[in-house]
Amino acid sequence: MSLSGRVALVTGASQGIGKACVLKLAERGATVAVVARNEEKLKELVSHISGTGGKSAAFPMDVADEEQIKNTCKIVIAEFGKIDILVNNAGITRDQLVMRMKRADWDAVINTNLTSAYLCTQQVISAMLRQRWGRIINITSIFGQIGQTGQANYASSKAGLIGLTMAIAREVASRNITCNAVAPGFIETAMTAALPENLKQEAVKLIPLGRVGAPEDVANAVAFLASEEASYITGHVLNVNGGMLMG
Image (cartoon, rainbow, N blue to C red; front, side, top):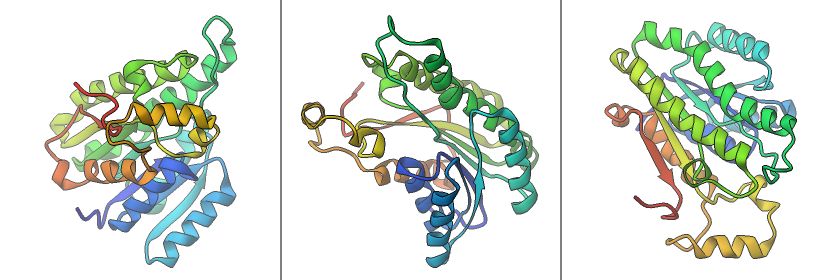
């Protein structure tokens, strides 16, 4: 599943699932534009990729800022000539029961997790249409499929990503562009590391494979959907959850 000659842009690339996706895409031969707010972490990641013979570049950007998205996408295309693969991974949580949730926390999560994916897609789609090839991959969540107490904003944003994925897939399929989503379950990241140990143990009991997933498990799915081998898959939600959700 070589991605040699392809250019990928990954948001939320500085840690967790985003970082794993960057490393996997670079390993497969893609040139990767790594995008996140933390410039220091981005530079460390680019340095690591260079040390392993890969090619990447850091582009500090806040996905909650529309102008930054527009400018960064233009800079990436100017530097690399194109964007073949877009991975909309950036995401945050602002958990609270809906009766106590502040409007600012709702807006922050929707803007970062959902609106940014729409804006990033909008910025790269013209180039993909012209070259008649593209891969758009949105990182959603099992909680966008089943909901979660205290995460009305997060679950809504991730469910919205699924709808966005299917709508875009229909719009661009005739130009050999696919749009798919990956829905992780319980993955060991900085976000889940903060959970109490008893909650983690209870979560594992719900996973038929009996273990928490790794960011690399998600990255493998992303690399597959970005490849030629996945050229006949579009509008699909690929579950990477150890069997937590079936059917």
